[in-house]
Image (cartoon, rainbow, N blue to C red; front, side, top):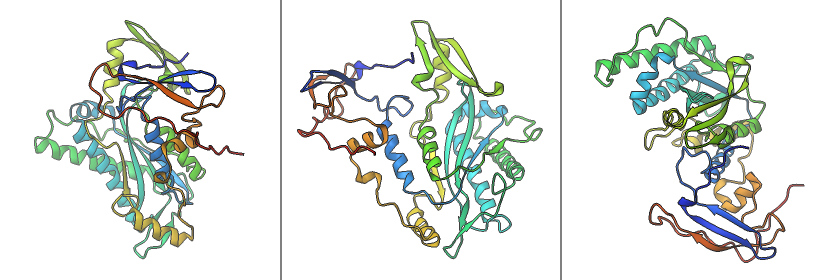
Length: 360
């Protein structure tokens, strides 16, 4: 059975069904973005907002990875190096996008920072979701003409990425922003830029967004057991055709591996660029949709209550008994044992349960 964390020390409430008497305990969120259990509603709001930005075009998935020789620099200067990775990758993409040989216009992209592999080892890399086209200076949309796996030659992108990244690192060292020298041999091997095949359509992009963007280093369903000494978890070995492996580690070693992937305080690990940036998205998407002759979406995330969101997106009926469909009523509040309450107690369900619309 997967490990499930229960956190009564965070506070919460106890509900009872007014019809059958079924009892349910619900604990408060810890509100930590690295928690694999919390933040589901916020994730669904984010994904729904991204759905409103989707266009009826192909989308590519591109991954930029740095060599493991740079892992120590990244570990000791996380914010500086992560920001450099974002800046370098997006500058390279924009450079190719504006090149008339390949596209000749403004690209749009969503960049997502990941720092882990399946076995929790440190592995910083950037995932990009890229619409297959550009916004031209005259406001028209231009589809990319590439018939291959990606709209630019990946080898060329990789070479430019490596050259710009190494040049920036040497500049950091010259300006004494790094506590150690830049490692040698960075040009000995090609850097990995992996362009996956295009998504089948916008629906696949949404599925990817929901599964991937808000992922933490390890999910609860991969943790098999936890005791006073050890943690046992599963992972997929990519080098052996995704073969499932089981590893048991001492608790302190598991925590050390997990804590490597905690982002710096306030660091934004999901960013939007080009015509998807917050500064130009509204006007740019309006121009693109006019060029493609498509209408904007009518339903937005802000138009839905959290109750509607968790039902539509997660299949959960707030305030409704899972056994008989009766109304769940809060009968007791569980206090937070570690600190004084920082927010209002849970809101009581409405007298009349929400009318959920079941899909036919």
